[in-house]
Image (cartoon, rainbow, N blue to C red; front, top):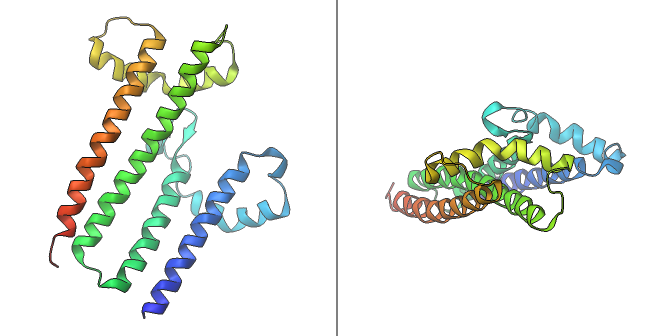
Amino acid sequence: MRILLTTLSSIVMIYALMCMVRIILTWIPNLSYSPFTRFLSSICDPWLNIFRGKKWLTMGSFDFGPAVAISILGAVSALLRGFTTGFHFGHLLALIVGLVWNIASAVIVFIVILLIIRLITILVSKNPYSNTMFEQIDRSVSSLVGNITRTFTGGRAVSYKAQLITAIISLIVIDIIGFFVFGIICNLFEAIPF
């Protein structure tokens, strides 16, 4: 049984890596229609499409569905591997909580990186609002950035640069606090003796 579970865990992890490669290849137009990409598409897209386009997994033009799909595969792989080492209910709860936090943290880190890139372009570019890509980023994050800023300014008007800085710092603090809080919760669940 242990060999079977270990094998299944490895298969799921390999499938998760294939899905990740599939997503990366969609960012490279020249490779989008290669035989290898079509092969990956036939295998991975049925799973990835379950999560694509879900409203609660999108922010503007950014779709976090595929990231969630891969995270779930990672959790399933860990779950199967855990069953080979005396798995218990507390560990299952810790795994679920850890999965939720890992997904949330990955989204936060992605947004922070996006905001930092946007802030740098504003600081160094002579005309930081003329690029189509920058406009798309601004449309995607403006609601989130505005909501975070209003929490600290009480609705007082501030520059977009100041809004970005406020949002970046706030999200980094949230990520750090979440890391410790969810870590404590996972440890409490792991301590459950059954």
